[in-house]
Amino acid sequence: MERSSYKSVSEISGITGRRKKIIYVDDVNYSLMTLKTRLSDYCEIFPADSVLKMYEYLESIKPDLILLDVNMPDIDGYEAIKSLKSDERYAEIPVMFLTGNSDRESVVKGLSLGAVDYVIKPFTTSKLIESIDTHLNPKKRKDSMHDEEDGNKPSVLIVDDVSSMLRAMQYALNDRYKVYILSKSEDVMDFLKNKTPELILLDYVMPILNGFDLIPMIRKLPEHKDTPILIITTEGTSDHVNEAMSLGASDFIVKPFKPKELNDKVGKHIRIARELKKIKEEFKVISS
Image 1 (spheres, helix red, strand yellow):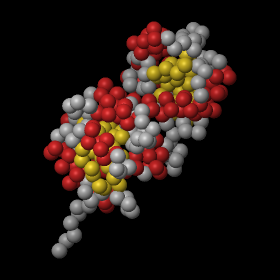
Image 2 (tube, rainbow, N blue to C red; image 1 turned 90 degrees about the vertical axis):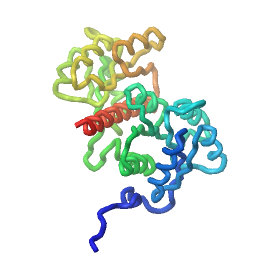
Image 3 (cartoon, one colour; image 1 turned 135 degrees about the vertical axis):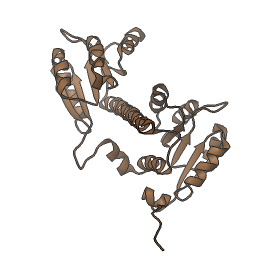
Image 4 (cartoon, rainbow, N blue to C red; image 1 turned 30 degrees about the vertical axis):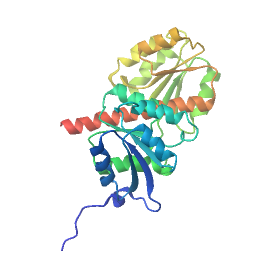
């Protein structure tokens, strides 16, 4: 008899050893039972039909991951992750959203609140396991951002007319990113005709063109319509921030800042941009 080409879930995941414990929170019982069946070979699923049930599980088990639906009565997924991340007992548990909300605002909100991934329904079992595996396996998680074998680091452009600030930010980011630096704001547009960095850091105060002048110019380039742009500024007032956001900035960093803060913000926005790109590509495949 010819051997079936079907692969078990454990073969797809490539994970051996201790079975992972995952809490899945969804108010739809069918979704809970279906996912538990689909992942039964791979991990132990603890189905929770509410956030309160999730907390009951957390009193007795330490999960490797929490899967959250967004739209639920009483406490939704966004409020749930806020609660988890604000509690030092649970803040380090990876949280993934598993939801039908596919609009850009929902994805950005979920990832900004600290989710490690955002998987949109419907999904294949293998795709879900691949996502889970990435965030439970430290080496795969690292390689998903940095392909060390190929030296394929995410690229970042820093624009600042103060050379000491340029070098300081370059030094802070060099280990994790391929960093380009420009000291003249008028050179930015020519640079972007030849390079496509995954994130752009713009100083606010610069001669000729300041950071606010550059944002709408960059956004007019089709390849940079969704590129994260972070404004570096000494002003953190709400009016200043609101103006930056209205022009198309993704976030801002107030000077002085620590290297870890810079790395955390850059990493977060690159991850969000990659997730949005992945989701768009998946929709193209589905609609084609």
